[in-house]
Length: 102
Length: 102
DNA sequence: TCAAGAGTTCCATTTTACTGAACAATGGGA
DNA sequence: TCCCATTGTTCAGTAAAATGGAACTCTTGA
Image (cartoon, rainbow over all chains, first blue to last red; front, side, top):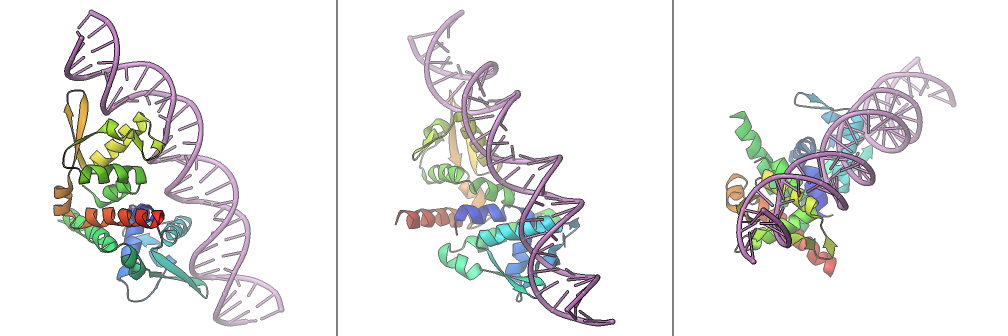
């Protein structure tokens, strides 16, 4: 779990949006739930790569349940190694969107 | 000054090392001071691109003084927009190196 | 005016990202 | 059991981005 991998994973707005959703959810999310984000449709091959990047960065865990993959965040583990990192990043994105909408 | 640009800039270990030095310095640093980082030599064309990336992300300011460029961090301004972000990232890198050396 | 030092730009090469198409894997029903 | 619809992965071709040597610009000092 390296900082550069985490930053690289979250430097992509699409991955950041996916992770924000997963991190804020109380239950797991399946990959296909993100087949479109906002207006933008995301091809499932791209989606698969995005999830792979998030997994390999150590940000999420994916478990197969039947035909679908349930994704949960690993915020707690990341927080132990790199305190405040995820919170600061997600807050930064939230503030950024807030300013864009205004 | 967008979060994705900041994360992308600092997702590269070389740029992170450069920025860490600049952010921690009490006086400005010139580009050529980083012509090698640790063992690794960095071509000056690559170095120029790295500084450009840091500048465009809003992380540093570069001013020409005579023949050289003096680079200073913009931590204060970034901190106002995205509180805790830089500190968390630099701390994460510091912890990562600490673990690698051990 | 010339030369040297510090950065930038150009461009060819390498690396990485994107995505449609084919594939694999699982479970539900006839 | 045999389809088959659904979910996600892998493959392969294309597009985009990073890398770095060479040439260039800009500034200062001799």
